[in-house]
Length: 294
Image (cartoon, rainbow, N blue to C red; front, side, top):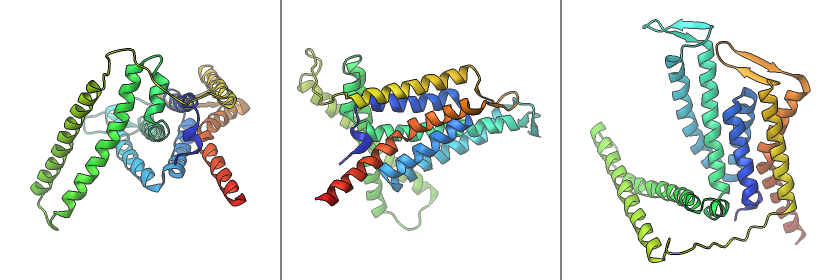
């Protein structure tokens, strides 16, 4: 049973996750990137377990290595030259640092979307978009559900293949096995999508005005939490635009941190990112307290 932040009002969840991703992506300050990555990683570990975190980290490592290696090879801006490529283009310190920042940004985005996929279930997504864009909400919820089903089917087919696998296989046999695996998953996904479309049509989808039921009620604490998140975002954006918190990658690395104002912005963003973790810990302590009282 999901508890803690997963049962918070969907609007509060959406505002918080959007805030974390927005600040991480568009300000791209190393301190914000570090806060975002660490706290999103800790929340995945606490809420979804080590297995899910390991899966996310594998994807993070693959994408990060690609970005870190490719960026210095294609971007030659920067004044601190470290080496020269055979074609004469320079490898600069600035391009390496920017590549590392971009890799961290990608890892943070992957982590936060793992958190979104865990906390925002399909009914919550439909609730958020039911008034402004019902078709978009339905599409997003179906996509999230379908992605999970495809992943589950992939693992089951792969497990079945492993049971028939020989100890030693040639490279061609491995390629053929992978091709059969992907063919099976794609065929199943197409058949499943056709079945879903037929089911929706038989139930009368799009034949009249669509209605929906939800049991979500926004409370006073949700309003206060949303107001606090939005206020913190406005402060961070203002400090960034006015260059109170400033980090430049090109043409040279420049940093500007103005005493307490910068640390206030860092603390505000950290508080936003840590809200899901604090909510889950508080809920778990309450369950243990009431359980021991009984």
